Image (cartoon, rainbow, N blue to C red; front, side, top):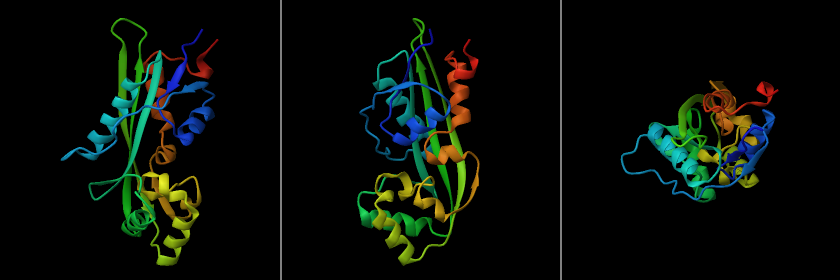
Length: 194
């Protein structure tokens, strides 16, 4: 019998993406501090948070991730309020930015255990936005719980002109890299099971 996969996240988007792979899982959100540490580089930040989430949740195989939108070296997390969302969208308007996701898989299959991780980067080109577009989008409520104040899989997709790299990474979980980490940790994917 295959070990049970635990997702250390409350993100419905990550749950949906893993469902696309045919994975059955248990959701156990991790309670961790997701603030950026002083002087912490964006890649180090997403990897640290993903590792801390994976370590905070019990399970045979635990998968955790953290996604950040990065513009000019600054991590744009989830906006505090509607005005903060407007500020982020104005900053992203007409630019290219990076979406980074740290992914960590922890498996307790042996006395030593296994912890594998990766950081995946995707470049996103954003359209130039006017005040009317920003006000409309913020009014939908969608940007208020999204890193960088937009959702490519939702109405915010209308502002994305180009994606270089993993699209699922921008949604919140790079599927190809996640599947590779699970496989390396000895977790059989649905198409590999007898």
